Image 1: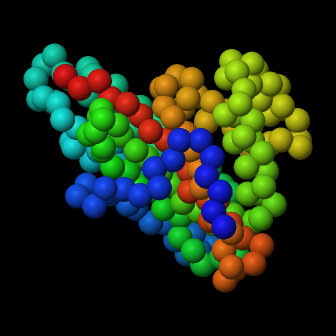
Image 2: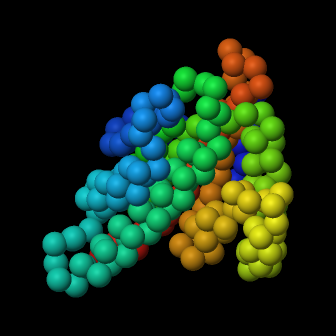
Image 3: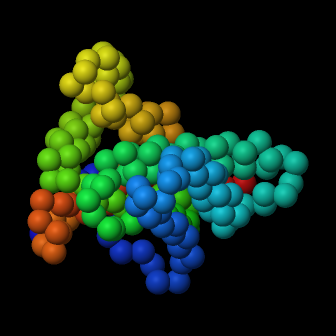
Length: 199
């Protein structure tokens, strides 16, 4: 049974454009998926920014559009980085990065990733996410910076999520779904919702 934490859109409206990129992480392909990660995040940002209900071609809007694209790209890159880093290598499932723009009740960019994680990694992520949602972000940031210097916590500091919430005021959520066909694995969908001030 799925567990949802935080702010999570369970079903997207049928009449919305959704862009989704899929990454096959087979190690025998000889290419590192990290090489295309930032490129994919910027592609998603350009696509979603073009869907926003705003006059993007006016000189006054250019700085705002640039900031919006930068925010989307940063968030997408952080989510994708985590999805790839904690993807269970023994599965044939793909890692997905996607996004869409919701216009009601206000313009919101939704960015999501889906990966398959080992059960142990998914449980650690669940504990971190519950802590993230219940904590003072400034205090948690300091704690995680200090913790990230220890060997036990290398690669799992969670600073990206804190930055997404603190610096971009984005809402975050996740859905954890055990995969019955693949014991000891969990499908993890992580989501960030970024409200946009339209010009």
